[in-house]
Amino acid sequence: MQSVAHNVPRQFDHRAATAHFMVCLEAYFSDILRGETALGFPDMPLPPDHLDREAVDDCRSIATTVALARHNVYKVSWDAEEYANDVSKAALPNPDAEARLMAKYPPLISRDEMLARVDDNLPLVLEPAIVADVKGRILLWSLLKVLSDSRQAKMLRDTRLIEAQMTVSELEPGAKVTKSWRTAPTFYSPNGNWISGSTLLYPAGYQQGHEASNQNPAPSADVRSSRAAEWMTAFEETGGILDGILAITHPTLHAAAQELMGAIWREHAESRAIMATWPVCFSSLQVIINRATLGHRDRHGEPGWFDLLVTLGTYGKASVLELRGLGISLPYGVGSIVPLASKLLLHGVPKFKVAVEDVTYAQLPGRVEDLGHGEGDQAILKHLGSLDIAAIGEAGGSGTSTLSSHRGDDADMDGEGESEVSDGTADGEDVAMAD
Image 1 (tube, rainbow, N blue to C red):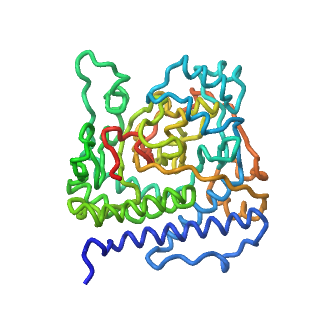
Image 2: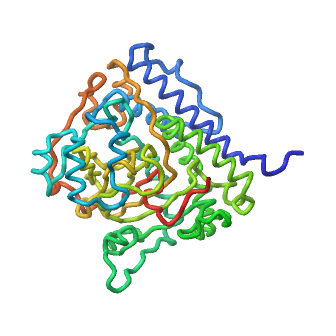
Image 3: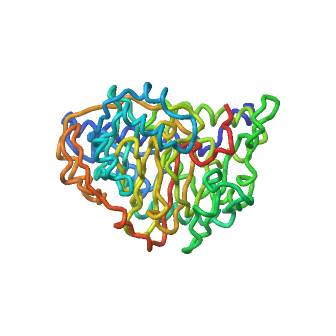
């Protein structure tokens, strides 16, 4: 009889099957964009049995959007590896250092235009797209409105299950706000229908300052709660879909994450009860509600590791994700997903552009994969029309890009709900990942 340590939970297999299905779907739609096959539902990859019709439709919609993003490429003129060698190890930027960095590694717009936009939003990328370095290494994906309304609603309902354990840390007297910006109440909105704050979830990790080799990784205190147990069970289907996005955009990471999850299950008995229902292939996840995010880089991981940012909600007009080192902003509209190299790229959501009700999930990062190119085919755009993607009708061939000027005072601050999912340790600097 096999040891329980080797009989992985069924949901491991379900999520892996969902991810494989989405990888096959994206390859199918990419072939259509390259003109190598015709669009036809009989030829589509078959879904695994555990997915219902709504989940299958979500997988197909997401795969088509990722295929379209791969079709629209922006390239900077510099090498990401060289850039990584010059980037500060500090989380928050130093203005003088950033100016020197920008002089050596130009953004996508001119430096003069960058300087003119210091107090304004940068140009928006208006279609699903990729930004890559001069050698084709992907720096980020922008997947606009990739999640269906029903998927967003489900994720928000699931998040309600752990809302009550959100907390905000009070600043110590005399402490600088910027030193504790991830947890300081200054950066959280107290308004709206959600409790503002954060909760940190991981099945096997270390508290800050306890990473010594004689310490065994253990589940976080927050993940042991009964609320978290309910959330993990409810989030399984969505977790498989997020795993699928990871498998498409970062196959090396997905494979490594799957291996890590298996290792935690086999080797850490204290974590096994949590792992039985842990809903994603990422090894750490932090949920954050109603927090503005200063422009920053993440300190943990490697330059090629990615965060996966997902926005959800009903607040109307979008916030923006600012990427000042690239000279662009991304629409942070509901249902959008932005995987990006968070240790490499300066990124943030300015406080005055954050709608009330913002929920963030921070998860394990992954390595950058080489960029694929392809020639266009308009047939797939008809299938994508139902996704309500901005400027989709104007999407062109490989390398096509559109930037739109956008002012900060256009942001709608009167919304009711947003959720963001972040792949990486972006907002989890009090936990180190288990190897």
